[in-house]
Amino acid sequence: MSTPDVTVTVIVYNDAERLTRAVDSVRRQTHANVEIIISDDHSTDGTPEVARRLAAQDPRVRHLRLERNSGGCSVPRNRALDIARAPYLMFLDSDDELPDDAVALLLAAHREREIDFAMGAVQRVRVDNGRRSTWMPHLVAERRTLDGIAADPRLLFEHLSTSKMYARAFLDRHGLRFPEGIHYEDQLFSARAYCLAKRFTIVPEPVYRWYVAPYATSEAASISNQRHKLANVRDRIHVQHLIDAFLAESGHESLREDKDYKFLKHDFRMYAGDLPYRDEAWLSSFADLVTPYLDTLTPGAFARLPRAERVVLQLIRDRRLPEARLAARGLGHGVGPRQITTDGEGSTYWGDRIPASAWARRELDISDLDLETRPFPSAQFRHEITEITRGPGASVDLAIRTYDPALRLPVGPRRATLLIAPGGHRLHVHFRLSPVSPGVFEGHAHLDLGAALLPFYGFSGVRHPLLRLQHQGVSHTGLLLAPLTFPAFTTQVPHHHLTLEPEGHNPGRLQARWEPTGATASLIRPTVRRLARPRVKRAARLVASALK
Image (cartoon, rainbow, N blue to C red; front, side, top):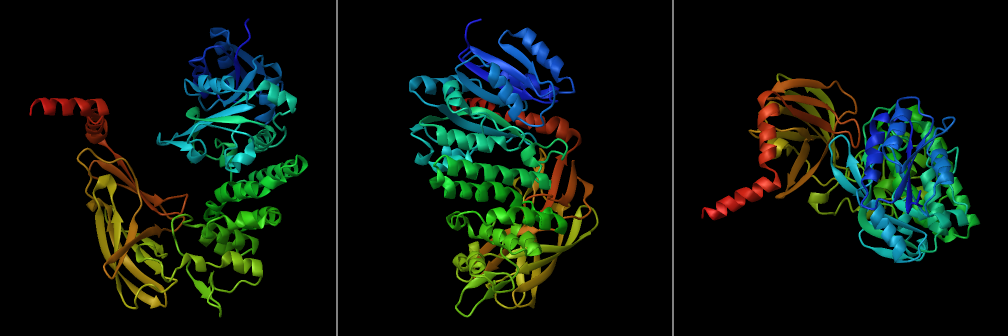
């Protein structure tokens, strides 16, 4: 057999259903001179049979089966690397795909100039709704060749090994292999590759298609989506220690602040969004695990974070765990605290007390948010549903409490409005918020979702009510936080099933979900979708112009 130009290793474990899709994406490559190694981590389902069939169909496909299960990605990748015959190497997971020209794009970058690896854009595809986005788009927006990671340390955020094509000589020269026996091996492998590479090229085109199942069951979730397991936290921190040691040993200590910032902004931030859904025991163990490592990070890394994220970090470090859970709700959405405290020098702090230590005062000082003076549309209020009572039909009665920590609203009753817009038609529900104590208002709203006007072709999707306030002719619209758990219910509205439920993730909003039924689902919506296709729209415009 002639020597292949590129070896693509497809690692798999008990994924017979999706393996063919992954391998076929390599077989379809516009650059056909590839070797495909299916590296099976001792699957116990039908994966071996699928792999053997694929190898029989195409001489470019080789099947490697490990004698025992390794429990991770590193061993199957390393064993395939041992037998790979090509001078360039790529890695693919069995639940993902390569775009048709991925190999050609990355190989062209290698042939254009001498580089250690080439990398491209990663296209994320949500398996629940099909939505597509680019992973870290700002890092791969333009074609460029860098002389080492120091030229752009932000690339540490792009730690996927699967978005790259490596020169075999580069990996062998440095003995670079995937670390075995640990999870999050990509982070350590990629950190080493970035630091050891003298030159690498970025291409802006998609070279990897990553299928993401954000709400998979705990049994089916990927390792990165098993954040509810404390072992997952422990593994992630262990890898950070290994990266820190490598940076120190390899003379790349200058990258430490950038690497620490990446950990805080990416790794810790993933856990922070989940904190409202964790119980006290989990939070306590989480604080025990992360606080010692947080204490080793560079101060500059904390200073680069948005203030809301610094607040959550410090509340964890101070073991103010119920408050950390509160602060984590609405991260990135401008949700305010319930309460603030001001010292004698005019500094404003998150919560009901002045922090004890100088470091805590610096991190919990939210004076820079300008809560008292920022424009009203961007003011930070906190709207919480304190009680949900089911009414007749598709209606609910909501008890709502609004916190105004900076006292932006005048004393007295305030007119408020709930807004929800399924299918583009907005439903307005007006109600009154009355003051019950300084900076706290309460009210009751009757939300009848059966009154929402839906398109004639139906609506399929999820919506969350918003709360709007007006002051001096200016409006403010903010999130409405719901109890994290409450009994969901499903009812019928015209031509739809309607479900009202807790959001179950992110800030934890009241969630309404519409599903078309009957002829609306089987006939009207498919017809409208066909008519709405770009080709049909263009034809309609041509006909209309011809008739003018």
